[in-house]
Length: 464
Ligand code: TYD
Ligand code: MG
Image (cartoon, rainbow, N blue to C red; front, side, top):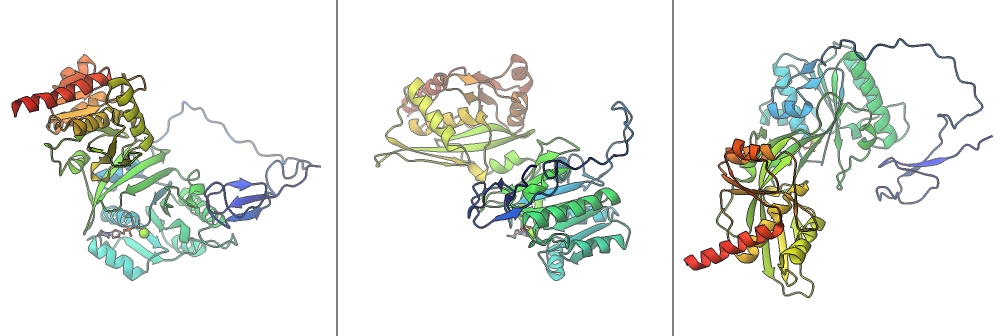
């Protein structure tokens, strides 16, 4: 007979091991492995006879189905990310760093939904009722239709909800503070988080309430504990932002009822979160277009075009190994662009420190920024300011040629809308060029860009 095997499961990230160890290799957490004896599953008891089940009725895939009923919050940036509103009977996980504004966002959403006559229940395991009221007062979000409770026991929460008509929206802030009698471990552990989420998801399906679970994220961007919930819920939203900056991005990473590449942009003010309808204006707000080393990148975040300024400083180094510092972009991608500039364009940067910064604390995630980075670097090196009405986008390959990137028409359209009228890009069909009404410089090799920027310097020298 097969030997029953004991596993050790990390209570922080859910990784499992055959042997106990003091540190989890998956997340680096100490003392988080706990013995877990799998008594279920096929391997647990191979000799046991399978129970005779009852057949279920199969339906045709081609059948008619209703659209998922949704509760629209009336906050367009939030509705865009949820794919057109909260779906009744679904469960949602909202993750983000502590203090990023999850409770603020959900309080504002609760008030907006309650205002339309829906019943909303907000259960906080972190704050007292008086604290939540104070926050709502500041946010101008006092609504009589929002029921408040400061509670952490799942049994008590479900008993409270079953006592009355089920609400349209239920916020549980946060999943890490909830606990159920069914599991013996402490609140916040994987077992508790999983059992609590399971109970609440079951409630959502049964009652038709949309349940929103709030989860705190660890420093490295992982939802600790709540990560195990990700596969159970219908949608996962992340609320992100950069310390010291006011903008916040709500990103959709999983959605069973809509697209996943949507983002919503907000700004944190003293009166709560304010929607930002045009993110590019926010990121280009304080731009000084006449200084060398700044290039505007026409980027895409999910399905949304976002224009950001990339700033570079190339300065003579006094160190043996020159410094390369990057904020808001990938360091290895910068090394690659520098290597291509050296190898294919004859631009020697070995004696220079290179600093790269994406303005406004924004993080660029796509390789299409290569060309804009190269333009900013060349502009700083040549001390020549780039034309202030120009945007850049395109991927650079190791051979020094450029590669086309997706969504060129949307990038050009956004740039045109914001008053830019020329673009240096790796790709643009004639059709796109005509439609955007912009002057487009089609860059096929990085050398062309290097020649163009160095000639700008010569021209400005001749003029002075
Ligand atoms: P909060 O929603 O409590 O964050 P989370 O629930 O994600 O932990 O947000 C708290 C932060 O937001 C806090 O640092 C203060 C700031 N804040 C404002 O700047 N303005 C406001 O109107 C509110 C309510 C909070
Ligand atoms: Mg909170």
